[in-house]
Length: 121
Length: 121
DNA sequence: TATTGACTTGGAGCCCACTCCAAGTTGTAA
DNA sequence: TTACAACTTGGAGTGGGCTCCAAGTCAATA
Image (tube, rainbow over all chains, first blue to last red; front, side, top):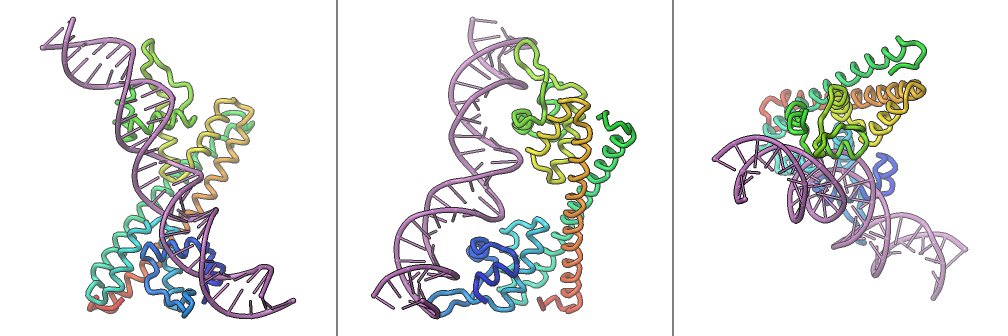
């Protein structure tokens, strides 16, 4: 798959794909004789994972470390697992923070309704 | 309350408090004869709201618009309510995105466990 | 009265995650 | 063979949200 196809399929700009590669998130992308990238299925799976983690706010640098561990082989499995567990913990905190904000908003929105005329803060 | 006290109480740096003020999030902070800020209870409540919304990812600029509407008076109540409803909607989306990432992580972490030896990606 | 510490200001700098740009190469189509 | 579209590179620029800095003011204390 060429970069423009991948870009369309995963809704990531071409620049972002190259940026991710430079940042170590997509190592070993194959290139043909004239230097053009050819993304494999494995690369694409990785992109899905990256998208998922990025959308949840995992920093590029941490993702890069995780992927570097993947490339190092099986010996790093435990470390990787710990990274995922840590990340899950952080996401749960983040989700709960957001939930508290939603609750607070519900409360505020209710007040606007309660005053019915919509005229009171 | 002086800025250093507010800073400690709400765990926001003094620079951040002044930055928020400059950005329109904290209008009309009283100053004494020698120009020193004196935060009122209302200011403090506003700071709590700002912290809550910021921690949920609401951009400073949008907060600034919301607060500008507050200052304009009762006529803007409906618009403000709509902003809060919109914000709630976005937070719910964000929360759900994070939840999906958590689910994906659970799945991945499970795989590490399943392979028991911790040796397989 | 000299020092100290907390405050003031405007503006520069930093980090992250892109995003854009210039200049060049390649492959196909007219 | 010339035009074009899509690709390549390195590096500069951008926007949001702070964070830091220099230079100055002020009030209380030694």
